Length: 153
Image (cartoon, rainbow, N blue to C red):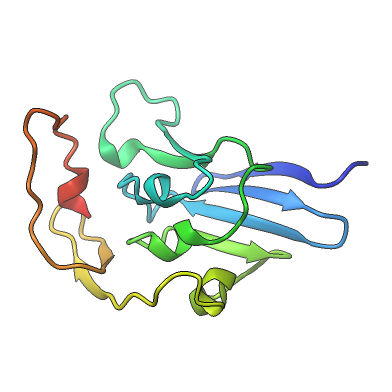
């Protein structure tokens, strides 16, 4: 058997992408119940390996888009997506155990700046989100596709 070995574990509520090494494994778990399809994880991934998929649905709304790792061997498991996800829908695991947000290497080693956030309740979906910056969204109606992702986050 060669290492690293990649496997995907899927159930009704989560998709987990596991990278197994000879003596340890790391994984990133996407929680579909918490995910809103905001695409923050897609935008912040330094390797560009997270995409969004519509899980086979024909008529797709933002809430039906879920993150997926296109090539788990290309993922560095850095935790940037975990740190930036406003809905805490992504978990980084080592040997099957969740790593606390402050223990993720990029946070612990101060690779990313400490971001103070507040939690607000979203009007549209009644979910709580971390907000790092206060302000207003200016919409470019020439480019807008009316997905309301900017409004939800």
